[in-house]
Amino acid sequence: MLRAGDLTIHFLNDGFWWDDGGAQFGIVPRELWEKEKPANARHRIKLSLTCPLIVTARDLVLVDTGIGNRLSEREQEIFTPDRGDGLVGHLRRLGFTPGDVTHVILSHLHFDHVGGVIDKSPSGDIRPVFPNARIYIQKSE
Image (cartoon, rainbow, N blue to C red; front, side, top):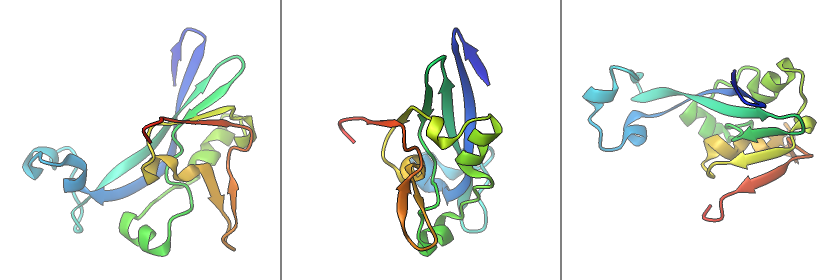
């Protein structure tokens, strides 16, 4: 948690996922990044799905929403998400519900930042996770 004036910022977590280290670090040689982020046998590194929650006197502002539960079986096999209690579980631990979130800011539209805006039921039905939130996306996205 971080306090800045009248704001309180909680760093919520939608879990972890695995992605190719080379894809994450681009042209940086593996020998430079693997000391800090060792790859597994599939050459993938573990990444956190951190989603800041900004709490003000009037609003709950969530920045990004993690992967969520909408990945296909193939995507789950590739990215091996481990969501634990997920973003909603962390909100509840703070005493909030998804309906309390007033704003969602999506930094960009990669699946690991935007996937949690919807909930996919086992039957395939989709519903918004944050039904009362105004969602903000950059125009370029």
